[in-house]
Image (cartoon, rainbow, N blue to C red; front, top):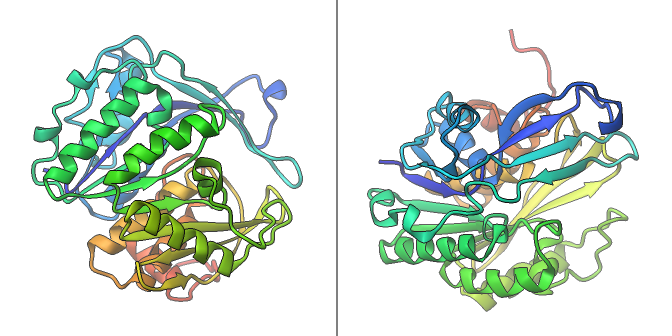
Length: 340
């Protein structure tokens, strides 16, 4: 059985070629992706037994989504088949001062209409050590939020470590809805992952002396955010990614990890972006991998940040990198020289 189980929605991703705008495009590149699916693929690429759980339609497009996971060795045996459609998202990649844009077409998807009876969590979690979900999944509807609660309860009963990436999406629900629902789910969570804005958007916990739009991020401010999250929800660890946006094309990328006693900050990478979608998911997967492998807090953090840094150079949602490549970058080899 899989050591790590993730639960969420995988979607068809449609993107104009290159940096074309939606209104310019006469074709779209079709791939698949979604928060928890991205984490499962990253972990499988790192050699971890990972399973992705969702509900997909029985038709060929649903099967294509399954196949996109199987090719990387992700366990898809617990994917439920049924419902009417696969969710879709359109992504227009930004450049320079023009931001990227996402349009969702996911209402009424198979997972959004799923019911608690669809998933046998007691069987799904047999032999599992870790369960991961994101705040995107309960945002799909009260029924899916209820499924998340059932999954968390079962995982907690079995002594499985639970991680959640807050991943607030304003196009899916309001801050009030997110706060109510996620506060209930956080009762079960051991490791919380967030970006610079998530804690404020979901729980009203704002980092002091920080201007995200202006690229000013305060280490002390985020240390206080992490500690408050940990104290409020009895978390063992809190990780926060720290993105300083120079433009849509260039960012400075780093993160922090609070282990219940001390706050650790990673090195900062200047990143020229090829595709930033899935960057947070690749960080989450790297952190899970590092903690599962018994790395120290700072080692796991540096591994996670390096993995995510590399993801920004890769097209599509999935992070196609190996453990050795991540360790090489984390160890200081960021030259990008040709490997012969």
